[in-house]
Amino acid sequence: MAQSRFKSSFIGDRLALAKFNPNLVCHSWQELETYTNNCQACGLHKSRSQVVAGRHNGNREADLLIIGEAPGRVEDERGLAFVGDSGKLLDIMLDSVGLESWYLTNVVRCRPLGNRTLFETPRNGLSRNPTKAECQSCWGFLQSEIALVKPLAILVLGKVAARTLLGTAAKFEKLMRTKHQYFEYPVWVAYHPASTDRA
Image: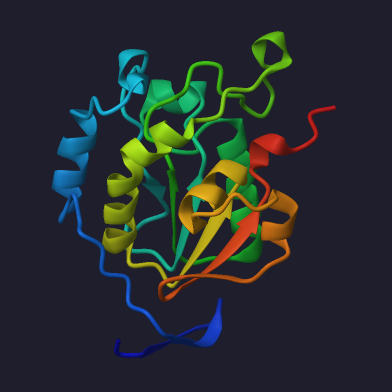
């Protein structure tokens, strides 16, 4: 496969060995919106208020693609990724490092009932992450989104997002200490803002 080079002040000069070329479900932003809004591939559609779309800071084609796990209550109500308390914290972090362009999305587009948010205590102390089957149901949408955003790098937040994108069941702590590559995209793994100590 042909090699490609790209340069970014964020990631430096990097040689990519494999080009991302998925069998896309959606070839345009319009198709992505239409298909996700009508999706009933898993049971999450039954309890959603609406499908949660990605959020960006000015341009959907962004240098950094940030992938979380699943929408929370506020995202379900507003229809945009990372607009609740976790998103506010993430916005502060992104502003502090001065990134010019970023795009935020989730592995799944509908809220799993009981999904924890930053300042909410989960019912019975349990948090509801998306299941592997739910993540697989949205996989084609995530692949399409990667192709449409055209990022220079990807940051995955949380265990579910990391394991889904990287296709591994490795321990999360090990994933955070390891360099990753997803086709031509360098990938970093970090804690999800919702995992911040709420004490």
